[in-house]
Amino acid sequence: MILHFELGEQSNIHSLPFPISKQTALLPLTISGIGHYNCDPTYYTLRKGQDNFLLLYTISGAGRILYEEKEHILLPGQVFVMDCRKEQYYGTYEDHWNFLWIHFQGKCAPDYTELLNAEDSTPLSLSGKISFPDYYDRLQALGHHFDLQKELQTSLLLQELMTDLINLKRTENFSSKYGSSRSKLNESISYLQSHYKEALSIEQAAEICHLSKCYFIKVFKAYTGQTPYDYLLQLRLHQAQRLLVETSLSVGDIAQETGFNDDKNFIACFKKKIGQTPLQYRKQNRYG
Image (cartoon, rainbow, N blue to C red; front, side, top):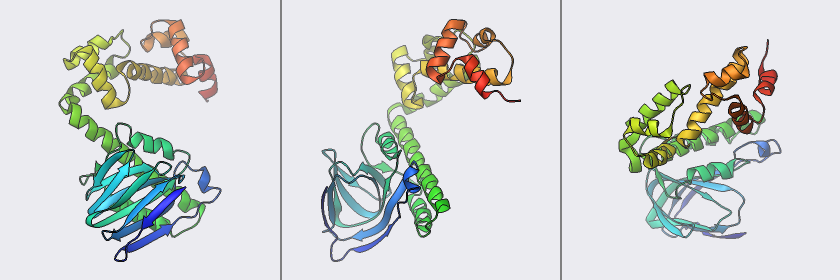
């Protein structure tokens, strides 16, 4: 591991390590430490090969970050996440940097980090929509207690923070690129939800938005994370799962009710996505 740092003689440093137990190591996300640094111009950290992840949030001043061969200036109200296994540099930009940090790890830490940096590793402006300091204070309070209940609460709260950040970044990225298409896409989604039983085509859904097929697919995926076909298939399979559990309809009838119109295609799709045949799913999930 590479680690070089300079805290600075005039810096005000507060940090809180979190204990990592055998139980904590099993959780999706867990914190190894948090801190509040108010640093002078000489502060910096250069690191590589540390097996955890890092969230940085600027309160005032600014930080300079070098990560994945790109330079970023982290301004007040912005957050940045990085994989500490990769080489990274961060330090005070100009006169001072007042910031909060959270080092985290866990089985799902790489996935959450990848989702947050899905399109690009850039600072995210919270714009008052998420209060990072509030999350920090709540996590810090939990860090003073060492028991399983608090460890579970810490993991859940960190998952909530990461989920909020991911959703905000997805929304901001979509708005900056395709914001004018949002209402049209909502119309197409409502149409799919109401007409999934019918023999729908992507062209029909695109026509509702008054968009070309290719552009509609691109914008739809940016908005929902799925292609229109995958979204429609998920709708149909969800309804099929419900009917298998709640009714005595035959597999053929359920195929008709959910827009498949073909028993073999329905069974093949169901098994591929759910991992069981429809009858196996019914037998395993039907109670009473």
